Image 1 (tube, rainbow, N blue to C red):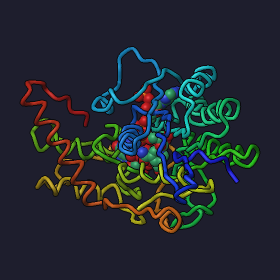
Image 2 (cartoon, rainbow, N blue to C red):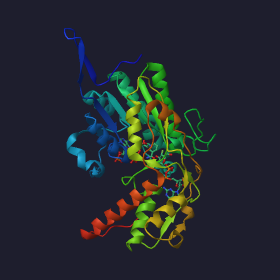
Image 3 (spheres, protein in one colour):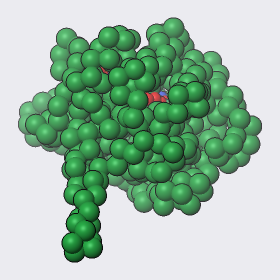
Length: 355
Ligand code: NAP
Ligand code: G4F
């Protein structure tokens, strides 16, 4: 049904009656390659033998820390989701078999301060990219980074691919728009365009402002005597937290299928922020009650109280399931932050606690 862009050309040898599979490397373009997920996805695609292009936006200083270790293997193109022409150029230059649209303004609290800009990046940005694909290379397979934040004030628990959306932030609203424009381009133009509805996923590369990393970094600072306390907002909120390295595998799998379909990616277990705190501090031998303060300024105008995903379809169709569980994830992040801070101290740098 869909034009095949699989990286395999089959050459028939009639005299011997068998065929040789000749592998032609696929080309992928990642927007948001400098972010947490972009860096893990780029590593995965390189391991799979792909030629990997990454789109980066111009900045007054380079923010390539997450991809520094693989930068020599990547081809970086300047572009911005706000600029249609740059997206056309990126598609024309890379001529990708696969595009992963991971770029977005992804921090929920900022979306209340910058609702219009969030709509431009996170919502309309997807349309601009889809248009560039439609006009220049419509056989490109397209992945949209949809979010469990779209479920917001949840209509059912656990949430699956059929659960109605009720976003609670300008970010969530923009993601719903991007989600449905992806569905719409699939249905209107027969593009191979899919959305992965991913629940929260974390790693040692997570931005310091997200709660998981704020806790792991804050606890490590306290353990090393670099900070005395950690201020947080709503400790009761519950999330279905998984590991980013597992989740980028699901993105790739979605683009290798015969049919374009949307999938929920989650662990199927939810924990509260206070459980995350408890796990992180106790791993360091600390009692969190002695250090954690609630700062009302960190509460949100509208909260998403409880997210829990059902990844049954992904397990059945993609053969995907999470490998890293909650306790392992927390320990991985705390250990990584402790080691990071210790390296900085031994190098004579004074780490700046952000707690
Ligand atoms: P992230 O670490 O915040 O990375 C976001 C990326 O988007 C960065 O590379 C950033 O570039 C880029 N970007 C932002 N605005 C851009 C623009 N106008 N033009 C081009 N690039 C732009 O986010 P992440 O955690 O990796 O998440 C990846 C995607 O998945 C995002 O779309 C996010 O909304 C979505 N998502 C994430 C989760 C999660 O739990 N992590 C769950 C569901 C969905 P700079 O480096 O230049 O800032
Ligand atoms: O870590 P968070 O900021 O992530 P949030 O808002 O769930 O969004 C993340 O996951 C989404 C998927 O559902 C992504 F689409 C999105 O891009 C992003 O990656 O906050 C998690 C929870 C919230 O309920 C928040 O109120 O933690 C609570 N929280 C409590 N104290 C805090 C804090 N969040 C932050 N960032 N900082 C705090 O001090």
